[in-house]
Each structure stands twice: as C-alpha cells, then as structure tokens.
Length: 600
Image (tube, rainbow, N blue to C red; front, side):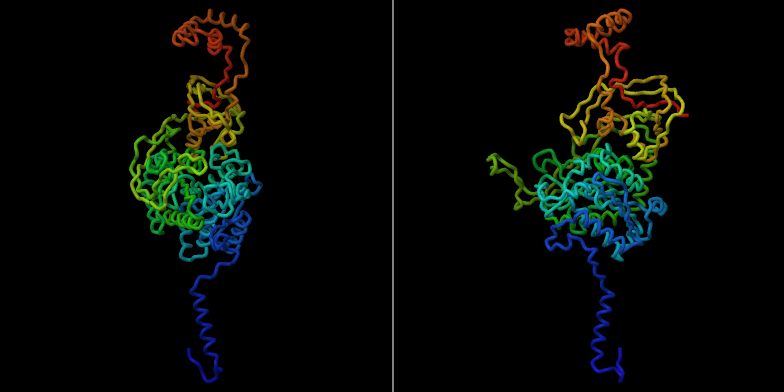
C-alpha cells in the first residue's frame, strides 16, 4: 500500500490497522453467537448442565442459524406431555432416511438423557452439533454420515430437577431424575413399551434403523482411574459377521481414537467380586435395554458410561470426544460397516433357529490392562463395621480377567408364522410399532400348528418396572396335525418380516428373556377360571377312570413315582381333573400358535 500527496496526514496508520483487523477477522473463526453457547460453557467451573427449556431453545437457535444443515422435528409424544424431539444433521440437506440410504450413508443415532441425572451426553451433544455445523473442517463429516440426535429422551425426568438423588455422583450442581413422568426407568422399557417415550422411540428408531446407536450414561460402582468406560452390544449376539466386525475393527478403532484424544478408556467396570481385580464382566444386556434392543435389528449399540466420581467438566469433554470419535470412525469405516450390516441382514432373512437367552462363559476370554486404585477396609464411621474404600494415593495398572464371551442358554426354531388371536390387542400394537408385518385372516385356515403349555415359571416377589417379571419358563410343546385358525386371527409370517424377524421371535417365544410372556402380557392365562366341587367331581372322576383304563394306569404309575401324590386324595382328584375333558383348555395354554403349515 502506498500513500499519495493528497492523503491526509495521519490517515495511514488507522487505515493500516483497520486492514489488519479485517484480515485477522477473516482468518479467525467467527465468535459463537450468545444463543449458541451452553450453560455448561458459561459456568467457569463447568459444573452446570442445561435445563430442558434451555436445551430446546439452543436447538431451535441452531436450526435458525443453520437452516440448510439441521432439521428439528417432533417425533411423537412422551409421558411428560412434551414431544420427543429429533435433530438431524447433514451437510447437504439429506434429512430423510431413504435419501441417506440411497447415498450409501450410514446413520449415527445419539440418544441422551434416558437417565437425566446422568446428563453429560445432553450437554456434549449440544456442543458437538454446533461445532460440526460451524467448523468448516468438521462439516464434511456430515457428508459421509447422517447424524440423528435425540437431545433428551426422558423429558419428565429432566423436568424433575434436584441436586440430591445421585448421591454417589460428583456434579453437576443440579440434574434430572432417573424415573420418567410415570416413574418408569426407560432403560428397561424398550420391549414392553409401557411409556409413550418408548413407543415414540420405537417408531423413530425403526424409521432410521441406524447402523450405530449410542445411548449416553454415567456409571455407578467402583473407583478407578478412567473417566470413560464403554458397554458395546455383546458381540456373540450379533452373529458371525457383525460380531467379528465389532470386535476386530470398530471397537479397536474407538479405543485408538480416544487414546489419540488423550482419553484412556476401558470396558464398563462390572464384576462379581468385591473389587475390579476379580475380573471385568461384560454387561450382558437383554432387549429391555437400549443396546440389547438395537441388536434385535442388527444395530451396533453402545452405552458410554462416564465415571461418576470424576468432575462434571471432564465427563462432558470425554463424552464429546467419544461422540466425535464415533462420527470419525463411522465415516472412515463406512464401507466395511455397511457391508457387515448388509451381510447380517441377509443372514437374518434366512435364519431358522434363534437364541432366546444368554449367559457369559465361565472362563475369561482374555485380560484387560486395568488402571485402578488399591482397595482396603477400615472401620465405618457410621456402624464401626469394616467398610470398603479405594486409596487414590495408590494407583495401579495390571491385567485383570475379562469375561466377554457368551453362549445361548435356550433356542427356538422359527415357525412358518405366529398366529395371534385378535383379542390380544396390546401385543398386536407392540408388534406393529416395531415393524412387524401382520395380515388378518378373512377365512378359516387349517393346517399343522404347535403351541405351548406353560408348565412352570418363576416370578419376582416385588413389582419390577410395573410388572411381575417371569423367568425360568418351562414349556410343554403341544402339536396338532390339523388346527383351524378362525377368521380374524392375525398372522406374522416369518418370511415377510425383514429386519423385524429376530424381534418377532424374541417377543413371542415365552422362554426369551424379555418376551411378552416374561413381562406379563399373557398373565390372564395363568389363572384358572373354572374348577369343581370335590364331592361332586368324585363321582365324575371315578366314572371317567372306569371308562378310560389307560388314564387309570397313568395315575397308578404317577402315584408310584410320587409318594406325596399317593398319600393325598385331593391331589389325586386334581390329577384326574387335569387329565380329563373337564379340565379348562385355556388354563396355562399359551394363546399364540406357532403355525407350521402353508400360508395361502
């Protein structure tokens, strides 16, 4: 720049510095607008989590600031009265599942605040969404991966704000409550779907059917050095292609990515002994949990669990970095991820036998180099009895056993179809909501079928998430060469189910850990409605035994095998009743039939 004779004296310096300031402004990132900063950032101690109103205002401001790259939509009702919100991020305006799939673009689905007292994901996702949209270096990631965020899943719990219910947790100052507006733990509701939250989620999840599903949490339990721990879907439950992909490619990349961001990470710290040295045990999530539910649809589910005793600031930053690592890794491995998912879907389409319940192997699958603190015992100031404590002045790093492999405890062969009587409307509604294709018979259908007699089961003594949960179910299969289904019966034909095939089997087979039977949807069949007066039935029973000598022989054999039966007249009368035409046909008879014949 030069000055001429007509340049006023003293003009050069101000113009020069103005140019420098303009150049600096062009080279520096624009300051974040006040509406796009978060309560977490504005707190110098970083010990504040957003309120629900602040969170929604933030995302609305984000959508207004970046209308071409973010969509904010209602995704159905919740028990709180407030709608579930869906936030979609895409660098090129690909805001619909079909368009994303057409581009071969995997979906990363992030859900926050299922337990609002564990709010790191809520704050981290706000920061990450803003940074992805405003940073030109990161925005291209949103051309490779479609990101879907549920800012807050348990809105009722977030509105129930307090500072005491997470007694074990180091901040934030205030936070939400674990239970939702109906006092349900939503991370036990993914199959039974008692809450409006779960019903809306099922439809949203089914719409997107994400490759990667992340459900953010904070841990309870032992003390150790890590800020971030991780629960992945148990790999053995994912089959011969998707499981190895998770173990051999995706998980190692996530651990490396976090290490590069200066975060050591470990599998979730769960163990059977008193301290972690007894061995880490993989969390064997059944479909009632988010990651177990995702696995039913060949989704790779993750529960990041930050450590409750670390300060809130590092917990939010670790969650932010992990979510970013998911996005980066999904983009890098997109082709391998989509190929593994496609292979798993293809295998599911022809799968004929399904595992229903799982257990961890008794022997460890390897070791984990664990960073913990030495533990000891000292007298309790409350009871004077010995109490456990961890000594942070004595950190250690050593290998501990890792129990990560699992095996199926029960299996079922898939029928041609399941036949569900129209009376069981709640069951039918749940099936439809989760993508099951149903067709209703308009004429009788005759053919071979199988159903079950519920021979035995165990039930919890106290309500569990609004139900008396059943387990250890023992079945007696009952096969009918010719069974007739009446008009109005609903058929779920296995060949027509696509991604919902495994969900259908685990929902309707009574021995499955989280089947509809286990959750009590069919409890009315477990109560006998008709019976007899013993003094009247004595004569009918005697006549029946006279006319049916084979049954008399069976009774005599049963008495020889069971001294208690032989010693009890009422027990023998009941035995005869249960083996006679007078017995109530529907008592303990599972109403869903396994159809084995052809479908017209």
